[in-house]
Length: 462
Image (cartoon, rainbow, N blue to C red; front, side, top):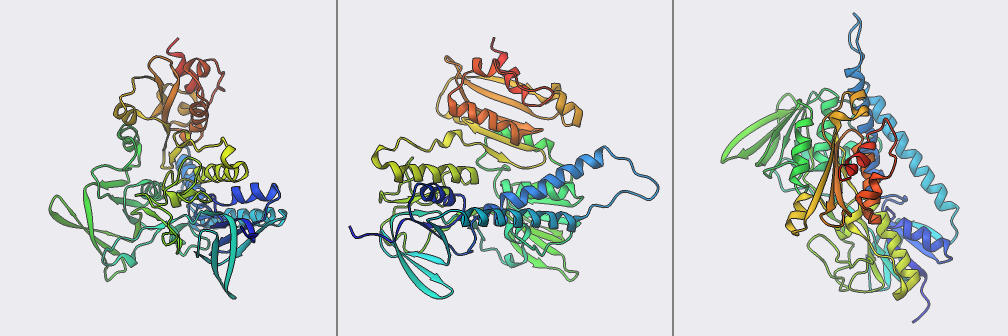
């Protein structure tokens, strides 16, 4: 085979691409990342997990401050929405700068701004500001991410999406008095709880018969009662149209149980899901698709062995940290070839719904265990007996762990309530390492932190 321009070309420069790019560049290979944004980072930093969690942390702290503060005759302290958005922007800019610095320090790795198109199994065309350029790569990594799904609803242009709200220099500079959220998945429900903390009256319209479709019903049942009373949920509701009223407010018409109704709000947030972005030419060169995106094996290989797909584009686990791990598996596969022993373990990837409060889970949850007919034992720790939860006055929820009935090997677990997003890391590591109830029970989790509930739950077996 003729010499290639690069050892690896990545289509995309986000979490599914740059870990592999850096790993191979540090190993002495030549790597080109192509991204239409021209910056190193995907949707997570542009409009996803980083900016939304910057908003979330402020919302959580604001809620706690309101609970534990008293105010004098001059009235309640005002919430500064604009200051929060400026803080969000500053975090995003800082991380972009750090990415740029890391890129500049890495020989053999370059980033090109442009739209990539597959020409053949080894060739990529890039439409840049200076025109078309063509490159060849020994391996190709498709990490083009996902984008907001826009359903064909009349008046949908009157809705905001995560792109509008969380991007740099967002046009949203104040908190609305009322908000309609279309979609009760994790993006919609998270955003609903943030704005409810700011004092917004929120209505969530969910097409399905339950919030958080795809999440274990047991987890949803524990989370939903703890959400703000400022949130009204309408299930089994099909949105028919969005229109503009004379005073500038939005009218959302929906159908529920064969009856139509309207809800009026100052702002409408569309969170109907995301879909993978498949670069031009990928299907044409013969890459096979699955129902969720590009089909890959546990080494992130497509049906064409030197072409890989990592992150949201393969639809396996659309989470940034999962994309990073997939990207590293890809790098190790490229370096090791058929001798690589690294594989992606999807069942040990933790997932968090960053609502207020949060719900996190990893491994096999009750519905999956029952579906697979796996006998298991449950160990639980409720936050009503937890010292940290009592300190904050947030005693709802708890830790639930699931062990193999005979071996007591940890199979999975979930946490709803205080510090869920942090506790799930320890549980996820235990699942990944194949630890048992005895292993967890013998670990001295720190007091007074909610994590001590993990070892205490495990000790219930002994």
